[in-house]
Image 1 (cartoon, rainbow, N blue to C red):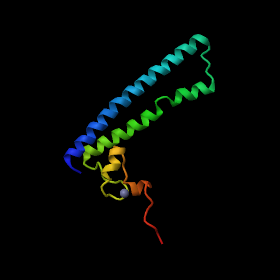
Image 2: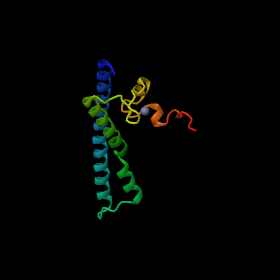
Image 3: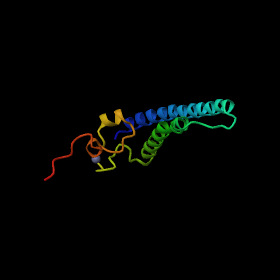
Length: 118
Ligand SMILES: [Zn+2]
């Protein structure tokens, strides 16, 4: 992969990382608010199961994506970014543009049907 492409990918990943960190921070602030409200309403702090589930899910998607972004940035540093973890071939540029933290080529990820086997 060319240096220019790598730098562009790094910029995109770092920008996304910043966004995710903000989302997670805001999500946590939201949870604190919900808890504070509930504690006023219920002296014993009881929460419905539904509420507990909602709180558990806040930030989960962002946290998972942040881990993928961090992984991609680490691969840029080690020089393995853009290489398929499955077959070792370069990942399609179009695929990386759509998903900058893809770790497999379209074939290995199953996006394209693998060659027919006998
Ligand atoms: Zn592959």
